[in-house]
Amino acid sequence: MEVYAIVDVGGHQLKIAPNSVLRVPRMSNEVGDAVGLDRVLILSNGKSVEVGKPYIEGKRLQAEVVRHGKEKKIVIFKKKRRKNYRRKKGHRQPFTEIRILDFPS
Image (spheres, rainbow, N blue to C red):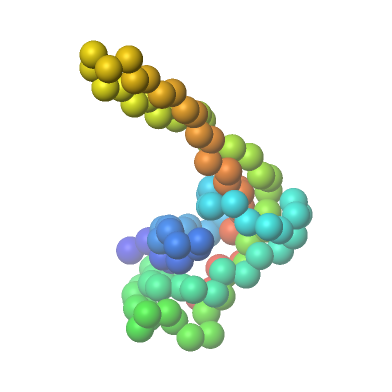
C-alpha cells in the first residue's frame, strides 16, 4: 500500500502524497506562508487506511505556498447559424501552487 491522503481543499477533493507539489484553487495566502489542511477525508500510512465521517478529527497536513498563477486559457465560443450571432470569450482560472511539508502518520 502507498502513503497518501485525500483532502478537501477549496471544494475539490485531492489525493496528496508526501512532499508533493499540487495546484489548488486560488488562496489568499502570500508566497512562503504556511497553510494547514485540516479537512482530511482519508489517510493511508502504508499499512492501514483511516476514513473520516466526513473528516478525520485531529489530523492536519502542513503545506507552504510556492506560487500563484493562472491556468492555460480556455476559449468559450458561441454561435447560432444563419443569425449572425457569434461570441468569443476567454478565461484563465487562477490557482495557488502548494508543497506538502508535514504529513501525519
